[in-house]
Image (cartoon, rainbow, N blue to C red):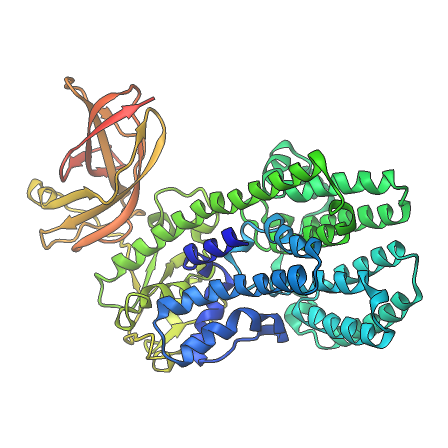
Length: 572
């Protein structure tokens, strides 16, 4: 929990990814809570940011508070179960669920499905200690928490009955569980009545379902097992070991319920959201969360009694997942470096609303998100730019996210505050945190033809913003700054005339240059200073080299060196 607490502070900005940025923007916009779909679990992560927003506290602290308050909520439940209710195994279950079920989820901390999970574990504690209280108290506690869980996310309608059935068999079919179950069924009917259109029919609008044959082909593959194995190693180990333990104890009814739920729910998610995998885990990974949550919780009596190699392996798995969150954070940090470069570059334009074409946005297009599907960037950019100061507010994102007609219809005095294209007047922004000038959208990356001469190229300075290690024939991302002092723009057009930042290698003592193997697109038209990342592929052989940057035309391979040459050592 201490490590996760440190993560919540270190990665507070990166955890604006996904719905998180939109929720916070709406909270800033309205100086109040933003409870969507009547899901009360949002309160746990919003109370501290809302308090700070109402006090006009610095936006950097508000962003930090949103991330930290999510961890604080989980930590308080950890203390409640471990030290107040004196059930260490349930406290440890909270840490296990937190670790075994998150990767992408960790960087979208506002998901109400995740925020409510400590109450699910608390419910298991209550049902496991049913005999310590009178029936009326058990009914009140069970139904109150049940209502909260059902309203926090509809998928708890599936998970909670599975856990109740598991405990019922475990506790010799005690009749009190039947009474609790009847009440929960009534609450399910009540919850269904209050479902909105998004929750009642979310699948038909997403169009990401797979046919059974395509689902099997996609998920019964070595690559899939390898990728999911890394993400869910602890959950997979616990499932297999738990199943064997139930079989060894001859708990065949619970074993059947256990395996039936796992394969049934996994198949449902794979069928309905498998079309998103492997390009993106969202919402595939978000909904899979129910599996490790339920498995860890219902198997508490099993794994809490383990000793020897099983317990040690469980600890190793927890350490692996803590490391894997950090490992995955490198991807998110990389994304934010590129995104913040775009925000920095947009400040050279007078317009407050700047879009970038996807082929100019990132040095390589390996991610579906990078390739035009960073789906919440309008909200993120408003927050990230305003963290520098309320006069710095810019709305920046990838052009292809929205159709061209949207840009034509958007009014000069409007900004966009949601992925669906909802708009609001610029004047309605919370001016304590954000100021935006009315105006039309600007497409930063033009298609203009570039006129190049020696004087113009010599006016461009090239300097790396951070050191990088180069290895033979391996890609390296190099953070660079380009400064244009000529007064004439260096265009970034990539459609009518493909051009970009190229490079050459010259080994010390040689005269023949080795041509670079990658052409990085310029992120924006270079009027003054542009920050961005470029890709450098190491030369064929190790040794001491000069790295020569330049402007390169793809159509004929012409190369125009600019800036200072870099002396680097390349190793195998």
